[in-house]
Image 1 (cartoon, rainbow, N blue to C red):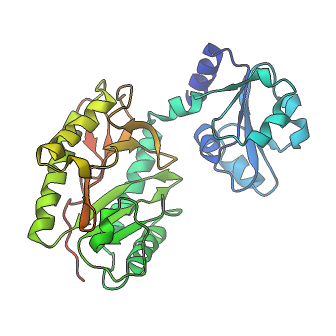
Image 2 (image 1 turned 135 degrees about the vertical axis):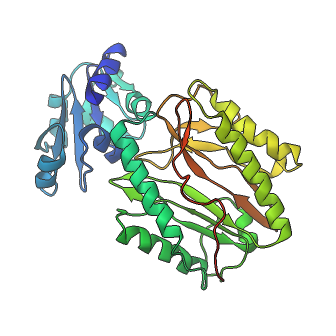
Image 3 (image 1 turned 180 degrees about the vertical axis):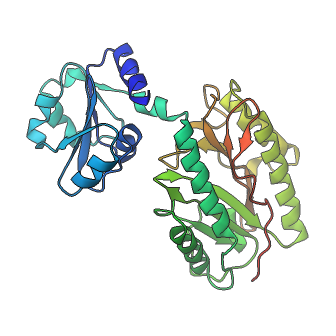
Length: 334
């Protein structure tokens, strides 16, 4: 069904064939994630081309036909007519696809398809969330930020994660006032922002918890939680993307901290940690059933500290918070 929908959309765009190179897109179409150079050609039917390193695994795992890889100089023989390419494709590849660049067309067909998740994809993301949620309970905060991050990643790995979904963030003390602060060799102090995720069969999870221990930190934490609840309550098919952001931003602004909410309220994820849609104030479009998005408002006071709370939400009429089994506030020892 997935491949049929892709082919139908390509036909609607008057595209005759497509060259797919990004590993996440290859995985999406074929259910095989290449470990080495590979590409996929979509014509009447999709065909995966892999080299000898991946051949055995590809033949076992791929849901589409698998063939031996062809030399780059032979790609023109595999493609015909108007050729679609991914936005992430390196410019150097274009010369191998066709002699007539007028036949090349940038297509978002795969990104459009990947916005909503199949039943199988949702199950894999649930598994990824389960691994990440259990791991945070074992984290060791008694040493440095890097040690805490490493202990978290180790626990995820031994419990089924291929690798972290992204570089784990452990930002404590005044370093928490930067949303994407790099994890340091500093000893852990409070508050502690931990942003982490696992990868299960290449599908991501994305969670943030903030550990607080003072009245001032607790005050900001409660505001962020209220903003997150407002955002989550708006998530439903047909709701404008910008309205989800507005719901969270209005709460934080009402408390006088609007200038300290310096990023969007959320984003989609799946095979990539950042996918469409983006839940920002200027986002266009609406939520669709079976999208999976984050809800992650935050307040970041320069020189003091920051607070962010992030959960993963499945879009449906009565939305489901996939991270609901993980408490918003966790106990820790320093």
